[in-house]
Amino acid sequence: MIQNRLDDLLQGFLNNGPAGVALSVKKDKQSIYENYFGYADLSKQKEINSKTIYRIYSMSKVITCVAGLQLMEQGKILLTDPLSAYLPEFQNMQVLENGQLEPASREITVKDLFTMTSGLTYGGEHTEVERMTSQVMAEVRDEERSLNVSKLRLLTKKLSENPLEFHPGTYWKYGLSHDVLGALIEKVSGQSFGEYLAENIFQPLGMQDTFFNVPLAKKHRLATLYDRKEAGELVKNTKLDSYAEPIAVFESGGAGLHSTLEDYQKFAHCLALGGTINHVTILSKHTIELMAQNHLPDELLPELGWNDQNGYGYGLGVRVMIDQTRGGSNSSIGEFGWSGLAGTYVFIDPKEKLSAVYMQQMLPNFEFYHQPRIRNVIYGALL
Image 1 (cartoon, rainbow, N blue to C red):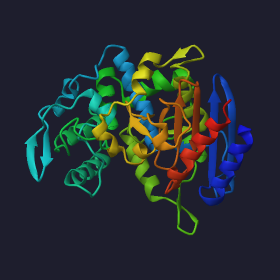
Image 2 (image 1 turned 45 degrees about the horizontal axis):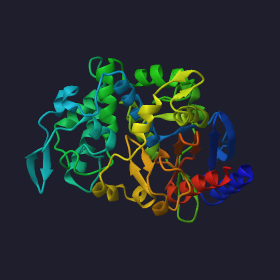
Image 3 (image 1 turned 90 degrees about the vertical axis):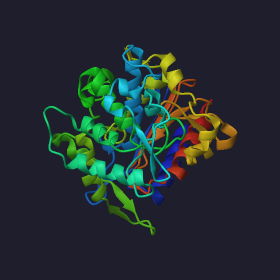
Image 4 (image 1 turned 180 degrees about the vertical axis):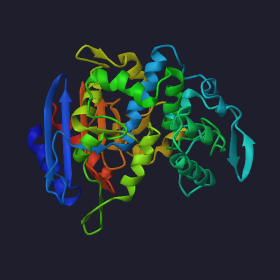
């Protein structure tokens, strides 16, 4: 039943959207669905397959937060610690409030990074702090490489010179918090962020095709990123691709990773099984339980926007299902995951020992349409 339903669903996506789609679903220790439709590159008529590499953008965040929680399990950090205990430049931060600089009401904590309540933003044009953040991003991309300071560390030092957009803990706002978490991991581990991820997550799980920079020998496997025009025409997006490579230079924990369907599913299903798979443990089931519960007070939930409308709260770097009736969802309470800019999507359900990973490469990503349907069809097929 699940095969036919998901085949029909994905074929429908393909008819009205992306050039190619791929989906993997695992329950317990079994694969209950895996299929590929369409093309990784339309002009070359190169079909999407198990070796295709995707820009997973913000699905990098889940990996980054797991890495940070590993350090918590080792006693090297506490969620309640001030960030300045590890990155001293974040001491005595100021907040830009009504055009005036005010001392932050409290320090940024490590937990604020996980929960996006730090006051750090992404670059943009909506607020003055967003504009200042855009300038920092541009400066970091253009900076020459240094043997002494990683690009990620350079990013945090420049960010700390800017004011925060709000007092830590008072709002939820999507931003560079997880990139700064990557810098914290560098500082505490004594390794580059990429080295830490490879040694503690990718290599133990056998994720051989997950990295910030795609190796030259594997670049031919990278799927083309497309813009979908209003009439449905797909046009290759070259602007964002040229922007992605510099992001990888500073090993962005928020958006810089590339992966395959198989690799990301190894990671996701390990979490679904309680943090251990094939005798490899990357996180305790108790820590996953902490990660996958809502950490936001009720008054901040509306700031999640679409996720809040679909019944989700926000945990330690992941959306978490907290209200099935609000979201019209048949998934479990506690189902968690995230998605990426180009439409990639993961959900993880430790109660059902279930995980699903969906890949595509298209803007706009149609996540409002695709992702709830994928989730509901999968749960609807479970006995």
